[in-house]
Amino acid sequence: MTPDVFLFWFLALTTVLAALGVIISANPIYSVLSLVMTMVGVAAIFVTLGAYFLAGVQLIVYAGAVLVLFVMVLMLFDLKHEIHAFTRGPVTGAIKIAAVGLLGGMIVGAIALSANSLMKTENNGIQTVIEGDSTKALGKLLFSQYLFGFEALGVLLLVVAVGAVALARAKGGTHAQH
Amino acid sequence: MLSTDLFTQIGLGHYLVLSALLFCCGMAGVLLRRNAIVLLMSIELMLNAVNVSFVAFSRYLGQQEGQIMVFFVMTIAAAEAAVGLALAVSIFKRFREVNIRYFEHLKG
Figure 1 (spheres, rainbow over the protein chains, first blue to last red):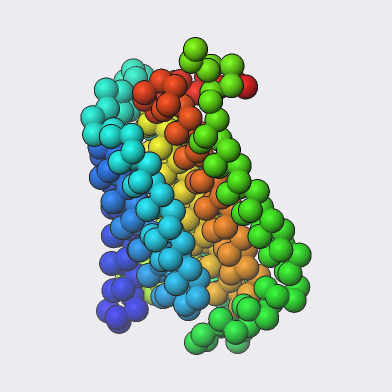
Figure 2 (cartoon, chains in turn cyan, green):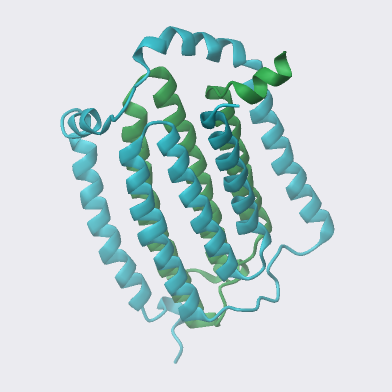
């Protein structure tokens, strides 16, 4: 077993277990901590796939900024105990779990069925597999071909920042407490 | 032969299955949990699963565009988390709880 293979299985197991921890733990604080673990695992998977810049962005944006936001809001609410953490009723819960299982089975089945064509494209593209650091090429592409999307995202972030502050400060609209 | 290959030869399919599992975890969270903030976290989980498959395709097909898409998805996810948390804050200010059933009173 080569180190690459071991690394993949280790990261896959860690990430999936942490993802299960997000949805299973009844305390939202533990959910956030599991989500941090998942994000770090996904960043490590990006490293194994050769996307070093994206791994760094993942760590900074998700594990750094977004999850700190989640933790801050949770601490603000002081939601240590939850009465109805999960959906009510064993029947609806079973139906929902069955639906998720069905979806997962369908996706995995589709991947297994298309394994042949996937292998073919893999072998065709074997010369073009990106080796080493792709950050430079990524930056060139982002600032030439996808420049409009990049700028639009900048505007979107500004709008969202203003909108989030406005929403959080709103007095409640029709539900204003008199 | 096939079974040992499955465990020792890591290919595109492995990453896609991992991505599918992560996505299903996120979807189960959205369906089963009642806390709006845990719901948002599950949505982040689903977005990350999609990112994994984007990067895997980008790597194995030798195209950079997949990584650009991941870049955009990350930005949108951060924006969505900010707006969602602001909504949760305004719900909490009104009802002292962020259970998803209070979101049916959302208007104005």
